[in-house]
Amino acid sequence: MQKFVYYAPTEIVFGRGEEARAAELVQRYGGKRVFVIYGGNSAKKSGLLARIEENLRASGLSVLSSGGVVPNPLVSTARRMVEEARAFQADFILAVGGGSVIDTAKGVAHTVAAPGSDIWEFWTGRKVEASLPIGVILTISAAGSETSNSAVLTNDTLPQPTKRGITTDFNRPKFAILNPELTMTLPVWQIGAGAADIFMHTAERYFTPILGNHLSDEIAEGLLRDVVHFGPIAVKNPQDYEAMSELMWCGSVSHVGLTGIGSKGDTPRDGDWSCHQLGMALSAIGDYTHGATLTAVFPAWARYVKDANPARFVRFAEKVYGITEGPEEERIEAGIRATEEFFASLGMPIRLGELLGHAASEEEILAFTDECSYQKSRSIGSFRVLAYEDIRNIYSRA
Ligand code: NZQ
Ligand code: ZN
Image: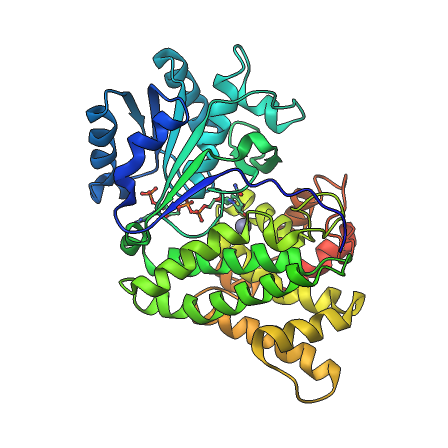
């Protein structure tokens, strides 16, 4: 095996009704003045937010709730929340929602812990050196932010909106409550997008140039098979507890670093991540659903890079889809096609044109490529390193 460091400090509390333990967990991690962050309307409509507020207050905690986080969450919203949390003298940030709410909570927690700072400083190079403790009550199985060390925000206050992520162990929540029943009110589009994101968090770590970690591979392949099996069941019937719970746990495991151990030798989180970079540029410009941006680019990316290590794609086809017949080239293509069918069964786009609603113009492709390459200042990927022209080719082929 490669050397690695594995750090996954988030306490996971999984099961029906476990959100009733919110106050107990907040107190365990030192919270007394709890700033609760939520999204649009779903947590209010379901009654979850009111239940949580009541649960916290019944234990003598002070609570201030603030909503309005949108998908592809915005720096402007987070800045408003920083002011509110500072005025409230919050000592704990509780996220009730999905990746967008959790990522906003992470940004707010870091900024409040650094008096006088602005949130975007941490997204543009300033090191996070302290943070308020963060807890999560998860309502969607998707981004994996409830266990991850990353946070992604879109800065809508710049002339050209830009979507960026930061990685730090301060992003790791203290606890995450996972009750699959809370995800049963999700629209099927969000369930499908979530399953796709979970698949991609695993695939991005699986397609790495550094191999020789067999347990990591086996865990990743098992996770991919689980999502391929249960994702379409969940989309067809969101009331299916078994499918929703498998997705929920897959989501957390897919982004806690476990499937990427050793993939770069000294950290558990590295992989290829090209599809995420390609997808984030699409969301920065067009505000598309994160999971759908990944499925729109994966097929073109896979066909573009497969020759960097055909054996890896042969193994992927065999272990995930049981494809063992025929010459290698055909098995590779069959594995990519099976992935397209899986994404389509989730209701996700498998071509860029499907995502945009029209064939991408040359001008649009250039805008996506500029954003993805940070205005020609970086390459992406590690399975095969992709420079500006490669990025443009992949968008064109997608
Ligand atoms: O705002 P509300 O009304 O709550 O509606 C949300 C939102 O419209 C809705 N929703 C959530 N739970 C629900 C529900 N609707 C009904 N019932 C429920 N139980 O779902 C919509 C999407 O929510 P969002 O939080 O945006 O979803 P997701 O968890 O997919 O998060 C996506 C964001 O996370 C980032 C993405 O880039 C994107 O901005 N990511 C964060 C990562 C991380 N921090 O580790 C990694 C990922 O790769 C990803 O980049
Ligand atoms: Zn993702």
